[in-house]
Length: 166
Length: 300
Ligand code: HEM
Image 1 (tube, helix red, strand yellow):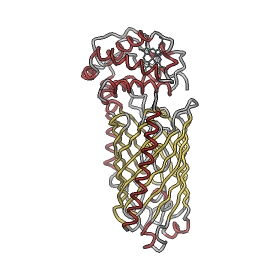
Image 2 (cartoon, chains in turn yellow, green):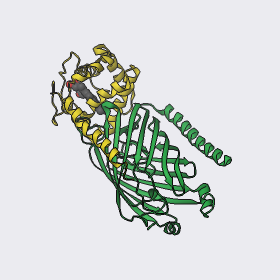
Image 3 (cartoon, chains in turn brown, orange):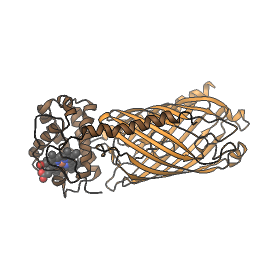
Image 4 (tube, chains in turn purple, orange):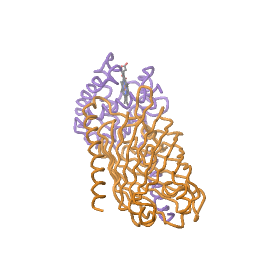
C-alpha cells in the first residue's frame, strides 16, 4: 500500500510544480487594453508563432471568423447577443485579437474584454456555448485540436472578465 | 463457467449498444452547444464508482451535472466492473448546483460469483452498499484559470452503508458503516490538452467499503492518495490512467492499490461512455483480479 506512494506523489507534485514555470514563461506583457484584473485582452505569446501558421495566418483567421460568427448566429444560446450588433466589426476585432495572441503581425485596437462585455449579463453557459461554437468553427477549418487548445488556453482566463452573471 | 462469461459479455454488449443508440440519438439532436455544467465536454469528468463526478475510480474537484438555465443539472450512470472472479454492478446519480455543490448517490452490488460458494456463502452471494456523497468546490476553476497555477479544489464526504454487518464482523471488519473524507485538486493544462487530478482520501474502508470499515490489522483513518491523468484527443474523446491507493486493514485478506487505463467518449452533452482495463489486485482469496470496467452516463 505505501510502497507506491512516493512515486506517484512525486509525479503529481512534479506536474503541478512545473505548471507555474511554464505559465510564467508565457506571461509576456500586454500589447494593448488591459482589463481590471490585469489579464490582457490580447496577450501576445511569441511561443505561439507556429500555431499562427496552423491557423493559416491572418487570411485563415479572417475566414475562420466568418464561420465562427455564422455558428454564433445559428446557436440559440448565443444568437440573442449577436443579433443586433455590428458583426463585421466584431469579426475584425476578433481577427486582430487572435492574430496578436498568436504572435502575428497585427495590433489589437478594440476595447478591453471587461468594458466591451459589461452589462451584457453573460453566464457561464453562454460563455461555454461560445467556446463550443469556436471549437466547431476551428474543426471545420481543419485546425489541429492541439493548436485549438493553445489558443483556447489564452482565451479561457478572459471568462473571469466576460462572465458577469452567476 | 462458459455460460457465466457469455452472460457477462452479453450484458456488457447490451450496455454498450444501449449507450451507442442513445448517443446516436443525442448526436442527431446536438444542434448548437454541447456544453456541460460549467465545463466543456469531458473536462467535467464522468461518474466515478462512488457516484461523484470524476474519473472512474476517484472523484475530481469538478462539480458534475449539466447546465440548465437555472445552473442546476443532473446525471445518472451505470457501471460494471467485471474481473475474473467477481463482478461489481454500480448505478447512481448526481446533482450539481451553481458549480458549487454536488450531491451524489450510488448503489453498489458486489457479486462474489464462485468465490461465494467456495467460502460457504453460496454461489453469487452479493454484498450491497449505498454511498451518499456531498462535494463542495472551495476555489479555483479548472477551465478558466489557465493563466495561474492554482487548481480547482473541492472537499467531499462519502457516507457508506453496507448491508452485511454480520459477515463483515466475521471477517474482522469493525463496522458496516463508514465515512470517507477527501480533498481533490483538478487542473486542466489546456495548452497540453492534459487534465490532472490528485485526491487525498481519509478512509477506513476495506475494498471501498464492500468489506466494511476498519479491521483487526488496522482500525484508524488513513490518508490514501488517488490520481487521474487524462489526455484529450479531441472534443469527444479522452484517454488516460488512474491510480487509487488503498488501506490494508484486514488480517484475513490482503488489499492492493487499484489501477486503470481508460478511454472516454462523449458524443454529446447527453451521454458519455467509458471503457477501461482495471487492475484491482488481490480480493479476498483471489489474486491479481483484473478485467473490464464499462460505464455509461446520461445527462439531463
Ligand atoms: C473568450 C471569449 C470572448 C472573446 C475573446 C471575446 C472577444 C470580443 C471582442 C474582441 C469584441 C469586440 C471588441 C470591440 O468591439 O472593441 C467582442 C464584442 C462582443 N462580444 Fe465578445 N468575446 C468573448 C466572449 C463573448 C461571449 C461569451 C459573449 C456572449 C455570449 C460575447 C458577446 C459579445 C458581443 C455581443 C459583442 C459586441 C458588443 C458591441 O459591439 O456592442 N462575447 N468580443
